[in-house]
Picture 1: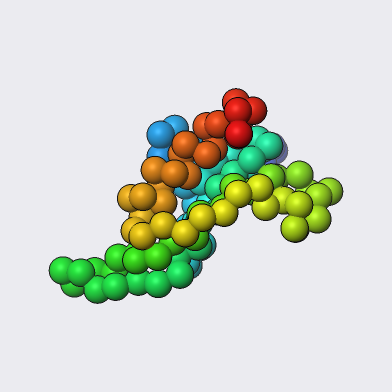
Picture 2 (picture 1 turned 60 degrees about the vertical axis):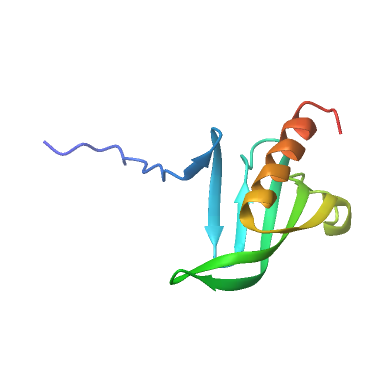
Length: 103
């Protein structure tokens, strides 16, 4: 007997420190879109290292998820970092503080 209810597929995302990490091309989102803030990272330049592409310059932006705000008001903070490690480090700090209302 066939089940009449449709099964909902939940897509699993990679996580970093327990928060979703979603990549589309050179744009990376860190955080849950249901929370008030997320981090958007844009890879501005890359370099070749040991046969793989590495992010060289990354723009990190703290963004409000409120759809009723204008795009200009959604952007809370922005910075450019050298390398993905430094970008992820500041991204996690900014997101933690923003979600705790300490920024």
